[in-house]
Length: 199
Image 1 (cartoon, rainbow, N blue to C red):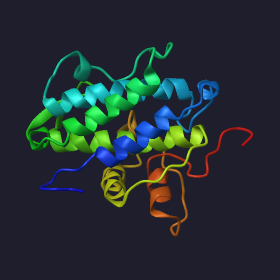
Image 2 (image 1 turned 60 degrees about the horizontal axis):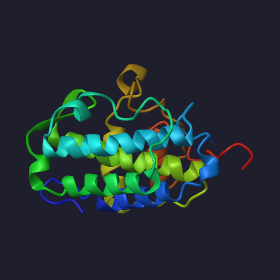
Image 3 (image 1 turned 120 degrees about the horizontal axis):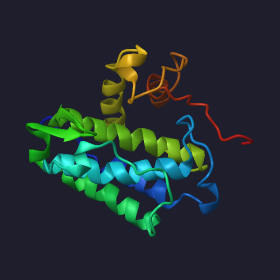
Image 4 (image 1 turned 60 degrees about the vertical axis):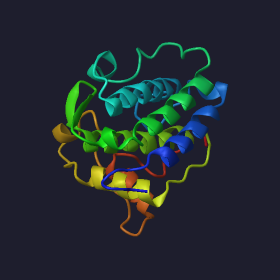
């Protein structure tokens, strides 16, 4: 629930943590809705963005906030199935501090208003949670507060490829009467009907 301009990231973090913990070992090389990205590479990204946005919440500016999250796409670290979910929960805890939402901070080497950074963190949790869920055959639902916040972010980004570079792919047409989350996915450059090959 939003409070005094803040957002509670716990529901989204916990949902994505469950998806991460439930990824089958045999699907690490499977494709995801993020074009050209395997499940393992997306897990690596999620595992990297969690400490980066935790540091951003704490205004602990340095190596974690100065570069895009995620490693070189090599082997996942030992214990990632429990370690990454713990990182996601720590991220939500860090953004529960009212001070996290005040002033400015940095993420991915970009200086941001702290409120915007918190919204981007939520967006990453929701969209990549869905990416991993559909890629690995897991259920995924988003709570109303998180959906409204993510919709406000993706709707504000122009369709121009230059404005979307590094954020979202080109918008995917979705019927106007589609469920709200499917319309948000389309705005974010995802095909809500995406399924793994052969599914």
